[in-house]
Length: 89
Image 1 (cartoon, helix red, strand yellow):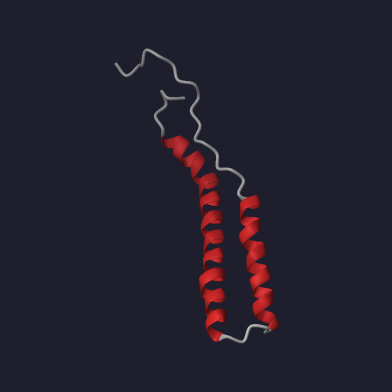
Image 2 (cartoon, rainbow, N blue to C red; image 1 turned 180 degrees about the vertical axis):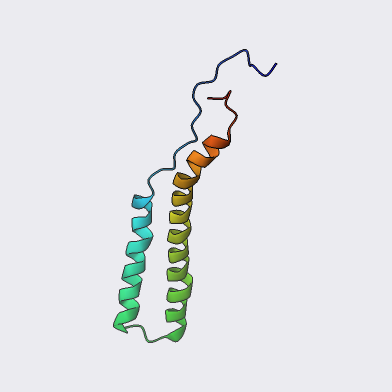
């Protein structure tokens, strides 16, 4: 009763795309803004705060979250495939 009338091909979870190319853009922009802030050319405190907190902090968080998702995807894929019932694959 548990046998299905059709056979499924070996099931694999979709792989995550390589995100290193997408992460290069925020990291380069982060470096450029950091160099600009480090040079001390900007004298307005409000603009410094906007650049540091409004631009740089979200870029760092985006990179950290993206790398975490990519790492967890590689680590969890074998565990998730091991939890599937044996008749699937």
